[in-house]
Length: 108
Image (cartoon, rainbow, N blue to C red; front, side):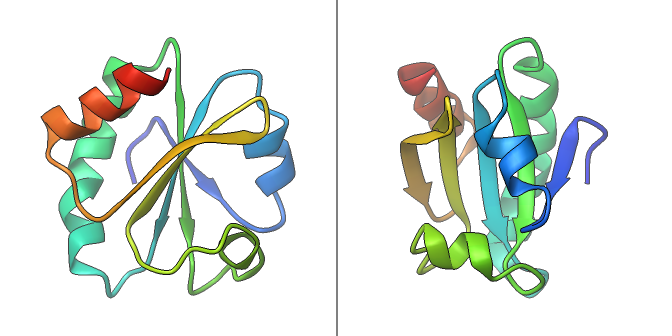
């Protein structure tokens, strides 16, 4: 996990995601997920490029079931952009860096 990416769990979800003053891009992922591994380096890059206006977190769905269940995560990777504690936008599946940047720029 990149140095700018926060590990989110069911225990710290409220504090990190819901109560954040900055928008949070949350990656729902798992160790066994190939597409999740493909986008991990992109999230590291984006976390540096957008560090002044966005937090990026990752939540492992195998170790944390409450948040994925609450937000009806059905496939991974699922990226959810939270603003002021609410879901602003979401995308499922692996994205290219340009698709990810377009997604963020449209919704931030």
